[in-house]
Length: 243
Image 1 (tube, helix red, strand yellow):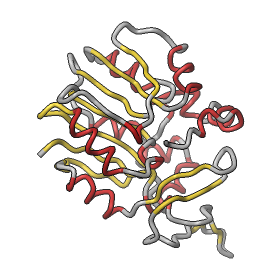
Image 2 (cartoon, rainbow, N blue to C red; image 1 turned 90 degrees about the horizontal axis):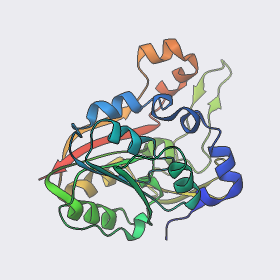
Image 3 (cartoon, rainbow, N blue to C red; image 1 turned 120 degrees about the vertical axis):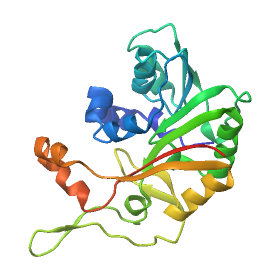
Protein backbone atom coordinates (compact mmCIF):
# COMPACT_ATOMS: atom_id res chain seq x y z
CA UNK A 1 0.00 0.00 0.00
CA UNK A 2 1.14 3.54 -0.76
CA UNK A 3 2.38 5.41 2.30
CA UNK A 4 -0.55 7.57 3.39
CA UNK A 5 1.51 10.47 4.71
CA UNK A 6 -1.20 12.99 3.82
CA UNK A 7 -3.38 11.70 6.67
CA UNK A 8 -0.57 12.47 9.11
CA UNK A 9 -1.81 15.47 11.12
CA UNK A 10 1.52 17.33 11.11
CA UNK A 11 2.05 16.73 7.39
CA UNK A 12 -1.48 17.74 6.44
CA UNK A 13 -1.30 20.91 8.49
CA UNK A 14 1.98 21.91 6.82
CA UNK A 15 0.71 20.94 3.37
CA UNK A 16 -2.42 23.04 3.81
CA UNK A 17 -0.22 26.14 4.13
CA UNK A 18 1.61 25.68 0.81
CA UNK A 19 0.74 28.29 -1.84
CA UNK A 20 -0.69 25.66 -4.20
CA UNK A 21 -2.95 24.42 -1.39
CA UNK A 22 -4.22 27.90 -0.64
CA UNK A 23 -4.44 29.30 -4.16
CA UNK A 24 -5.07 26.20 -6.28
CA UNK A 25 -3.92 25.64 -9.84
CA UNK A 26 -3.05 29.27 -10.51
CA UNK A 27 -0.63 29.17 -7.57
CA UNK A 28 1.24 26.18 -9.02
CA UNK A 29 3.91 27.67 -11.29
CA UNK A 30 3.98 24.60 -13.55
CA UNK A 31 0.22 24.79 -14.21
CA UNK A 32 0.44 26.91 -17.41
CA UNK A 33 2.80 24.33 -18.94
CA UNK A 34 0.63 21.42 -17.83
CA UNK A 35 -2.54 23.10 -19.04
CA UNK A 36 -1.00 23.55 -22.50
CA UNK A 37 -0.46 19.78 -22.68
CA UNK A 38 -4.08 18.90 -21.94
CA UNK A 39 -6.65 17.96 -24.58
CA UNK A 40 -10.05 19.59 -24.79
CA UNK A 41 -12.14 18.01 -22.04
CA UNK A 42 -15.54 19.26 -23.23
CA UNK A 43 -17.96 16.34 -22.94
CA UNK A 44 -15.17 13.97 -21.86
CA UNK A 45 -14.73 11.38 -19.11
CA UNK A 46 -11.86 12.47 -16.85
CA UNK A 47 -9.98 10.72 -14.03
CA UNK A 48 -7.62 12.52 -11.63
CA UNK A 49 -5.21 10.16 -9.84
CA UNK A 50 -4.05 11.62 -6.53
CA UNK A 51 -6.60 14.42 -6.70
CA UNK A 52 -5.70 16.06 -3.40
CA UNK A 53 -7.91 19.09 -2.80
CA UNK A 54 -9.74 18.48 -6.09
CA UNK A 55 -8.53 21.66 -7.78
CA UNK A 56 -8.06 19.93 -11.15
CA UNK A 57 -11.36 18.06 -10.86
CA UNK A 58 -13.26 21.30 -10.42
CA UNK A 59 -11.32 22.95 -13.24
CA UNK A 60 -12.16 20.07 -15.61
CA UNK A 61 -15.82 20.33 -14.68
CA UNK A 62 -15.75 24.08 -15.39
CA UNK A 63 -14.27 23.27 -18.82
CA UNK A 64 -17.31 21.15 -19.61
CA UNK A 65 -16.16 17.61 -18.80
CA UNK A 66 -19.11 15.21 -18.76
CA UNK A 67 -17.85 13.37 -15.69
CA UNK A 68 -14.83 13.78 -13.43
CA UNK A 69 -13.67 11.27 -10.84
CA UNK A 70 -10.97 12.26 -8.36
CA UNK A 71 -9.29 9.50 -6.37
CA UNK A 72 -6.84 9.72 -3.50
CA UNK A 73 -5.57 7.48 -0.71
CA UNK A 74 -5.95 10.26 1.87
CA UNK A 75 -9.22 10.68 3.75
CA UNK A 76 -8.18 14.19 4.80
CA UNK A 77 -7.55 15.21 1.19
CA UNK A 78 -10.86 13.82 0.01
CA UNK A 79 -12.74 15.52 2.85
CA UNK A 80 -11.12 18.83 1.91
CA UNK A 81 -11.97 18.31 -1.78
CA UNK A 82 -15.58 17.48 -1.01
CA UNK A 83 -15.90 20.50 1.24
CA UNK A 84 -14.65 22.99 -1.35
CA UNK A 85 -17.79 23.00 -3.43
CA UNK A 86 -20.18 20.50 -4.97
CA UNK A 87 -20.47 20.02 -8.72
CA UNK A 88 -22.85 17.46 -10.11
CA UNK A 89 -20.29 16.17 -12.61
CA UNK A 90 -17.54 15.64 -10.01
CA UNK A 91 -17.23 12.73 -7.58
CA UNK A 92 -14.47 11.46 -5.32
CA UNK A 93 -13.36 8.02 -4.16
CA UNK A 94 -10.71 6.69 -1.80
CA UNK A 95 -8.33 4.41 -3.71
CA UNK A 96 -4.73 3.29 -3.36
CA UNK A 97 -2.95 3.83 -6.68
CA UNK A 98 -0.75 0.81 -5.97
CA UNK A 99 -3.91 -1.29 -6.29
CA UNK A 100 -5.70 0.68 -9.00
CA UNK A 101 -8.25 -1.24 -11.08
CA UNK A 102 -10.25 0.57 -13.76
CA UNK A 103 -13.11 -0.49 -16.02
CA UNK A 104 -11.84 -1.01 -19.57
CA UNK A 105 -11.74 1.87 -22.07
CA UNK A 106 -13.65 4.25 -19.78
CA UNK A 107 -11.70 7.52 -19.71
CA UNK A 108 -10.75 10.10 -22.32
CA UNK A 109 -8.18 11.73 -20.05
CA UNK A 110 -6.29 10.40 -17.05
CA UNK A 111 -4.41 13.14 -15.23
CA UNK A 112 -2.11 13.16 -12.24
CA UNK A 113 -0.19 15.92 -10.51
CA UNK A 114 2.75 15.07 -8.25
CA UNK A 115 1.49 11.64 -7.18
CA UNK A 116 3.28 9.00 -9.27
CA UNK A 117 6.61 9.51 -7.48
CA UNK A 118 5.02 7.91 -4.41
CA UNK A 119 4.33 4.70 -6.36
CA UNK A 120 6.75 1.78 -6.04
CA UNK A 121 5.25 -0.43 -8.76
CA UNK A 122 5.05 2.06 -11.61
CA UNK A 123 4.69 -0.61 -14.32
CA UNK A 124 1.57 -2.09 -12.73
CA UNK A 125 0.03 1.37 -12.35
CA UNK A 126 0.70 2.15 -16.01
CA UNK A 127 -0.90 -1.15 -17.06
CA UNK A 128 -4.03 -0.22 -15.08
CA UNK A 129 -4.10 3.24 -16.66
CA UNK A 130 -3.71 1.80 -20.15
CA UNK A 131 -6.58 -0.59 -19.47
CA UNK A 132 -8.81 2.27 -18.35
CA UNK A 133 -8.12 4.64 -21.24
CA UNK A 134 -10.23 4.79 -24.36
CA UNK A 135 -8.33 4.02 -27.59
CA UNK A 136 -7.88 7.74 -28.30
CA UNK A 137 -7.37 8.66 -24.64
CA UNK A 138 -4.55 10.71 -23.15
CA UNK A 139 -2.38 10.43 -20.05
CA UNK A 140 -0.94 13.70 -18.72
CA UNK A 141 1.04 13.80 -15.49
CA UNK A 142 3.70 15.57 -13.48
CA UNK A 143 6.23 14.10 -11.07
CA UNK A 144 9.27 15.34 -9.23
CA UNK A 145 12.20 15.28 -11.63
CA UNK A 146 14.70 12.44 -11.04
CA UNK A 147 17.52 14.96 -10.64
CA UNK A 148 15.53 16.63 -7.86
CA UNK A 149 14.69 13.31 -6.19
CA UNK A 150 18.03 11.51 -6.48
CA UNK A 151 20.08 13.00 -3.61
CA UNK A 152 20.15 11.09 -0.35
CA UNK A 153 20.25 14.45 1.45
CA UNK A 154 18.45 16.91 -0.83
CA UNK A 155 18.98 20.60 -0.35
CA UNK A 156 20.83 23.52 -1.89
CA UNK A 157 24.56 23.87 -1.38
CA UNK A 158 26.01 27.38 -1.47
CA UNK A 159 29.58 28.12 -2.55
CA UNK A 160 31.84 30.93 -1.34
CA UNK A 161 30.39 33.33 -3.90
CA UNK A 162 26.84 32.65 -2.74
CA UNK A 163 25.93 30.60 -5.80
CA UNK A 164 23.53 27.71 -5.25
CA UNK A 165 24.19 24.17 -6.45
CA UNK A 166 21.92 21.15 -6.27
CA UNK A 167 23.77 17.97 -5.24
CA UNK A 168 23.18 14.96 -7.47
CA UNK A 169 24.30 11.67 -5.98
CA UNK A 170 23.09 8.08 -6.02
CA UNK A 171 21.30 8.82 -9.30
CA UNK A 172 21.59 5.26 -10.62
CA UNK A 173 20.50 3.78 -7.28
CA UNK A 174 16.77 3.64 -7.85
CA UNK A 175 14.23 3.02 -5.15
CA UNK A 176 12.94 4.66 -1.97
CA UNK A 177 14.07 8.09 -0.85
CA UNK A 178 13.15 9.10 2.70
CA UNK A 179 13.08 12.79 3.57
CA UNK A 180 11.67 15.10 6.20
CA UNK A 181 9.60 17.16 3.76
CA UNK A 182 6.83 18.78 5.87
CA UNK A 183 6.98 15.82 8.29
CA UNK A 184 9.54 13.14 9.18
CA UNK A 185 9.79 9.93 7.17
CA UNK A 186 8.17 10.87 3.85
CA UNK A 187 8.85 8.08 1.33
CA UNK A 188 9.13 8.76 -2.39
CA UNK A 189 10.33 6.49 -5.18
CA UNK A 190 13.32 7.59 -7.26
CA UNK A 191 13.49 6.37 -10.85
CA UNK A 192 15.89 7.61 -13.50
CA UNK A 193 14.54 9.57 -16.42
CA UNK A 194 15.28 6.62 -18.69
CA UNK A 195 13.41 4.20 -16.45
CA UNK A 196 10.35 6.46 -16.38
CA UNK A 197 10.28 6.97 -20.15
CA UNK A 198 10.95 3.31 -20.94
CA UNK A 199 8.20 2.21 -18.56
CA UNK A 200 5.75 4.32 -20.54
CA UNK A 201 6.94 2.91 -23.86
CA UNK A 202 6.84 -0.66 -22.59
CA UNK A 203 3.30 -0.12 -21.31
CA UNK A 204 2.18 0.81 -24.82
CA UNK A 205 2.17 4.59 -24.64
CA UNK A 206 3.34 7.03 -27.28
CA UNK A 207 5.08 10.13 -26.00
CA UNK A 208 3.64 13.42 -27.19
CA UNK A 209 5.46 15.91 -24.99
CA UNK A 210 8.13 15.70 -22.30
CA UNK A 211 9.10 18.84 -20.40
CA UNK A 212 11.76 19.29 -17.75
CA UNK A 213 9.90 22.21 -16.31
CA UNK A 214 11.44 25.54 -15.45
CA UNK A 215 9.85 28.96 -14.91
CA UNK A 216 9.39 31.38 -17.79
CA UNK A 217 11.02 34.82 -17.91
CA UNK A 218 7.64 36.35 -17.10
CA UNK A 219 7.19 34.11 -14.06
CA UNK A 220 10.64 34.98 -12.73
CA UNK A 221 9.96 38.68 -13.25
CA UNK A 222 6.75 38.35 -11.24
CA UNK A 223 8.21 36.01 -8.59
CA UNK A 224 12.02 36.43 -8.38
CA UNK A 225 12.26 33.52 -5.91
CA UNK A 226 11.46 31.18 -8.82
CA UNK A 227 14.84 31.98 -10.41
CA UNK A 228 16.52 29.20 -8.42
CA UNK A 229 14.31 26.65 -10.21
CA UNK A 230 16.43 27.29 -13.30
CA UNK A 231 19.47 25.82 -11.57
CA UNK A 232 18.03 22.31 -11.85
CA UNK A 233 14.77 20.80 -13.04
CA UNK A 234 12.38 20.22 -10.16
CA UNK A 235 9.48 18.77 -12.14
CA UNK A 236 8.97 16.45 -15.09
CA UNK A 237 5.80 16.90 -17.16
CA UNK A 238 4.67 14.20 -19.58
CA UNK A 239 1.82 13.87 -22.08
CA UNK A 240 1.22 10.62 -23.95
CA UNK A 241 -1.39 8.62 -25.82
CA UNK A 242 -1.94 4.97 -26.61
CA UNK A 243 -0.02 3.42 -29.47
